[in-house]
Image (cartoon, rainbow, N blue to C red; front, top):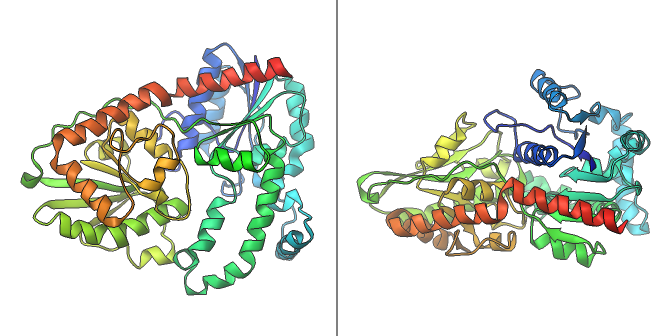
Length: 436
């Protein structure tokens, strides 16, 4: 089978480098398994606006390595290749057009997905490769640039619903934008509605959508995308963590309160919940125990978070070189990013299961993965007090701690290894091809 892959990121082998995200690692695992299965794979990278308009030496070497591993690699596209002539006047005109576009139900895709302007060139590259299937891996830019191509099945693995982070920031505008955030809200909701319409136009053009988040399946089906299936996130096999902690009252307890970049939507909502709701309750419930809460991640927090992030028991670690060791040395691992108005499945969940960590989540997270079961592979709570009590139970009850760790690892082995997910995608390729 010949598979043409579109991505907004370069695949990487290891996450022990600053700037490498989960999608780099996951993409590498999928490509490797496709190649091992005997398929011919071509990679087209279309960088988003956050990437500089040139490759780093590290990225250039990685692309050369992929070529030596028998991958076909097309020249990359940078944002400058599809964001031409975007001066302030054009941006202002686009913003005004977005507002009135909702009123008159006229949506221009290029206003939200400028990489759609690459369609002609991307289609030419696809046709030259003559693929049996297209696989778009977590790439809004790839979805847009391949819009309208129907000569082969087009299957996408979708992480976020593209407009959801912006929507959450409007709901909690004071946290993200400060007291003048209401100025963003005045026009923001109209723009979000336009963005949603543009997003659904593109998603309906796909043969199939695999979602990372279980709750997103219903959203897409309700809005006219019928061939939708939960796939969930994956992670490399980190190996089970063996925990031999002594009794909690005799040592310092290490709580991993957060990992991830500090200036993104889910992280901000999760850390705000941790600092304002969990920490006060933890002070009462953990009285008499010596504990630390570690926040790991690069970036400058949003204004609303900076006001509450300082706490005598909270350690801001920044980016750490050996993340695995940091996580393995913790008693519990918190993932509270779903405590607010933004809902997503995070690769950190599967990373925790892969490593056999004791995972504690906000109860909203149970809606993000079908395999997440409270009391089996996670502990959960709705309020700061419930989360604090879950932490106390996990650090003082060794049997409970091991129960969550072992069942999390089992969930990973049975449902979330890269090979299991890649096999499901390849099965979908074969079925789509047979039906086309």
